[in-house]
Length: 148
Image 1 (cartoon, rainbow, N blue to C red):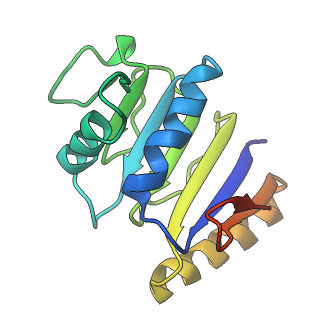
Image 2 (image 1 turned 45 degrees about the horizontal axis):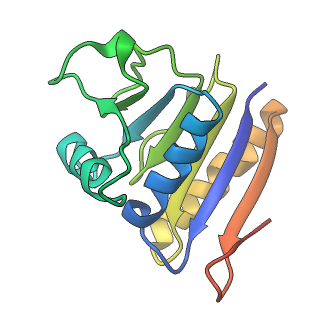
């Protein structure tokens, strides 16, 4: 069973949160995939990852257009592919999170101001709970700290 983490974005958008979560995954030695939903493009996510951290930091990643999938520490995709062998997958902008088989961890980032995204997260929560996954919910407090 996968560990499923729901990140309720209340004060920051995915572009501000995702890079730090990916950096933490890489620090742990994990390969990751970012699955993009219909509201954001692969190129948009790639650009955010190139430009989001200080100049002395770097989030190595690639897309289908870049090639060399097996060697990419972070793979950005609009599908369910993970040629880099990622066992950690981030779902953003409404990406379908149906298939978590084989994952160690799935991280679902959803916009708390988007009623449809909140309802999708609730539906996913119930489904993952029924399937027996370990689930946790995280939300930012007013000091921008994540609270479980």
